[in-house]
Amino acid sequence: MIEISHLTKVYGTKTAVQDITFSVDRGEILGFLGPNAAGKTTTMRILTCYMPATSGRASIAGFDVFGQSMEVRRRIGYLPENPPLYSEMTVEKYLEFVGGIKGLDRRLLKTRVPEVMEKTSIRSEAGRIIRHLSKGYRQRVGIAQALIHNPDVLILDEPTVGLDPKQIIEVRELIKGLGGDHTVILSTHILPEVSMTCGRVIIINEGRIVASDTTENLTRRLMGSDNLYAEVEGPEEAVETRIRALGGVTAVSRQKTGKGRGNGYLIETEIGRDVRRDLAALVVGQGWGLLEMRPVGMSLEEVFLHLTTREEEVPA
Amino acid sequence: MRNTWIIFRRELRSYFSSPLAYAVMAGFLLIAGFFFYAILTSFLNTAMRSEMQAQYYRMAPPPINVNLMALRPFFHNLAVVLIFTVPLITMRLYAEEFRNGTIELLATSPLRNWETVLGKSLAAFVLYASLIAGTLVYVAVLFFSGKPEPGQIFTSYVGLLLLGGAFVAVGTFLSTLTENQIVAGFLTIILLLLFWVVGWADEFAGPAVGSVLAYVSLLSHFDEFAKGVIDLKDVVLYLSFIGFFLFLTHLSLESKRWRTR
Ligand SMILES: Nc1ncnc2c1ncn2[C@@H]1O[C@H](COP(=O)(O)OP(=O)(O)O)[C@@H](O)[C@H]1O
Ligand SMILES: [Mg+2]
Image 1: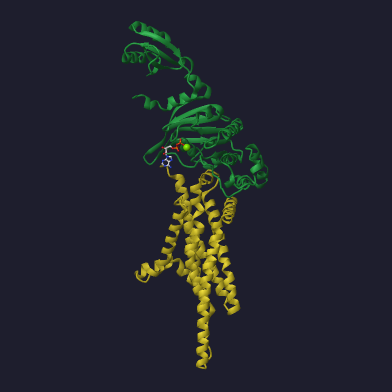
Image 2: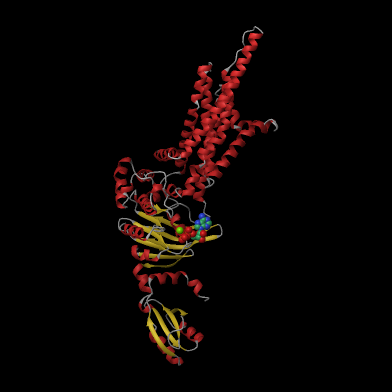
């Protein structure tokens, strides 16, 4: 449904998005996860035809966002980071206006406006002036606005930001219910949001995709045997370099000193590769002491931190 | 066309749900009323004096013309006041959308830029026309105190509509250049003042440059209408001026969409 290939966006001298490639299938809810300034909004603005990419291509339902933008716009609903509300209008009039510019005729509006208000639970606020609504209700009006023409694709930029915990849960439930009928891309810098609402995650940092997988896989990837914690007694430098040299090991980082006399090491390995036997052989062969060895799991939160802070970790 | 209508309706409704429209209307009618009063009293004084002189010298009173002596200066002053009024109406048109982020809704909906340009400028124009219509009350007063010539009043109003259309077009364009309404309004006033004063410069400039300057001076063309003359040349100037600035507005919006850096 959504295809993005080698997308790059440069603002002046600042590269906001660099060579991004991914696709989203029909009915999928994709989480677009990254810290602030990662390039989420930029990518979404390109997808919604708000601005062009510097290079690369993006298409929705087979239509190019740049070359066939009118076709694309008819098929997308977009909730920008700041809901695009006209504060002096009533909720109902506003939704009629948006429906109108999305191409719905009068007759269709009559049924569609109450429908989306029902779906987003704002029916009771229909006659209220948007300026007087709470943040949570405004966000719902923003989502209702994106849904009004029943678009194939929904693009939601940080839909829960600034809401209180109760509202966050409600909005997440609402979004969860949208999958299947709609293809949804949802950006967020809050990790639990993704695991709660999305089937698949793309993690973006500093304009680049650093990971892309199903929510379950991403969690599993760094769980179980894919990560090892080992406490080894021996010369720190040598231990670290030798472990890193083992086949299948992708990274080693020194942890705080363990309970015993040895040093703690966090060892990451290629997925599905078990290096425990090799590690044990290495330690024994060198005459060091293997004091502890266990697989470690990571919460998705740690995965996220880990993935997006890798650069800073290396020199430390 | 339907999209233009939808944009137009929302824009007009938004004008009338904000205090700004009412404040501008009240302010404009107050100032126009003041000018009207001042010009009318000075006109009546002149009329009275010339009548007294005529009686003193036992001559027939010289003919005095309400249109020439009261209406023309009134409309001329009105036109100058409009330089400061129209920007208050147009400054928010796009600047507010940029500021509130609602431009993201418009720019990602299946709308053409020219559709929003037409809808928005038309709404501003209708508000402007209702301001101008308010001054009809003053003009009506003249019919009690003299015999103004309706034809000249009519051409003056045609002129005011064309002049206002040109002002609205300039204001709409400048509103796309910034997200700050005040800046947009200020720029509009400056540019409109410039289009006014170039009319004076034609006397210092050489004949070739001078005639060009006189041609683009918006207010000097209006004077013809205020005299009671509708010249096709003036109408064409205003219409092409309006067309040109609306096209610039469209281009300004397109360029935001096409800029790849
Ligand atoms: N209009 C712009 N002009 C210049 N730089 C921008 C603009 N918009 C975003 N950026 C920069 O691009 C980077 C990515 O921003 P953004 O896409 O908004 O990230 P996110 O939505 O993930 O927080 C940031 O460093 C930001 O400062
Ligand atoms: Mg953002």
